[in-house]
Image (cartoon, rainbow, N blue to C red; front, side):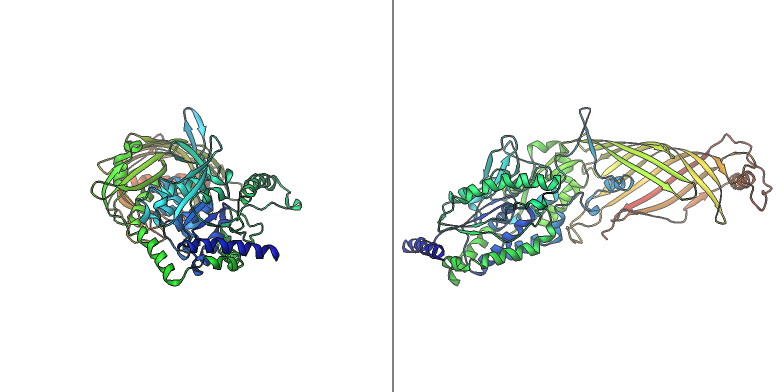
Length: 637
């Protein structure tokens, strides 16, 4: 009780000295790192705003840098709370992204290869990504919400002065970020090694600032403030009885290292500073389901210190003036007058310019990022606003996959009908990507097992917008086709198919219309296909040993219209309309009848074989010439 009284007296003296000088005390806010636990910072901000306590400067690390950066950009505590509790924020930490953000080619690939972890091929060796999460979705979310201050390059010019702390991955040095791109600074400070890919700024490879300085008290002190409000949501040390696995012991080791640095920073606090430590218990830093609860605990922690915080309270008119000044700096939406491509992304200039259609809104810019990143061959796609000669200048950039661009995907298929019939297949797809300035792709598919297959296709975009494409392709496969009559499996064909053809079509980008959760509308893929298919089929197994195993043949020419849809859940729905023209000759009908007769004769159908002669040209294969117009699209479901 006596210590509290002494602190209140000292605090009152500092405030009184500032007021005697004709100025209110300048308040600095320090926000520590802590992952999802950092949502408690939002609760503290809500109480500070409710109590009319102005914040002149913010220094943050990791999640504290994100919350602090959003507040420094001019957002209110309520707006930040709505953002971090939204589905968009939660999904920003999940990868891969939702299917409605992928191009049609990537969705088709995901349908056939469910193991969604590509392995890169570079310089003859296999590579894996630098992080489990690329951070693209997080960057897009932060970019959209901070767009009104995107032109500001000096963080001292933001509505509230701001500093973020990151760690140099090469040297381990703490890097104080005071200028440059605000979103990049927040992303770098939050880039937990192994989880997020590192962020490169000014030639440095930066990761989570919590490794070097999780509680930047000294940094905030250098920002010309009189009083510090310090919020520490750092990692707690576990009790002995909970250290029962490799994961918990490893986390404890990291917590000890981080806590040691935080304790050293706490020693720099003055009697007039206010330390808040929300009671978060052992809440996980990776569990974003705790965000609403963490916000409430942050509010409770700030309310418990209202007696000391009250001395910093402004009158209603003074606080209204303070808020008006913040809003004036934030300004409105930018008006893009010029577009250019960053020097390190000139190779992708045509692709980048074609991807951004709507430059008039944050949603339109976000849709451009979505379209380009959904192609799958970029590690990051971004834009930055700068001052141009005629107004706002939009600078576009793209960085291809550092672990590629070529990659391999794997798949495994096992089937069993519990009646002695089983199949197995192991597949691999090799994608030679990023060929030429328009990022063409050469794809090879290999499959071994019950249904072996070899296929290749060469996707070649062309045109000024790179939306038109031509795609020659060829494939060879073997598969079993059962014949079932009256619920009884009579026979099984071994079907050998050789196919080649060419597609010519156009891809339609994701637009900014019909904005829903992520501000995107359906993308479309329309193509005209010409295929020639050679098929040779032979009965491989029968219900009885009667008869021989003749090879069946037929010749069919079909013109048809086919439409297919890749749904958001990944399934394919195909709809075939009545053939426009179907030329079936009488020999074809006879051949089809002969096929059924041969099967029944071979397998001993109970009703006896049909008296139709079996084919005499058993060495011939089926020949299908298919000309189809197909329209592929994906709806937002």
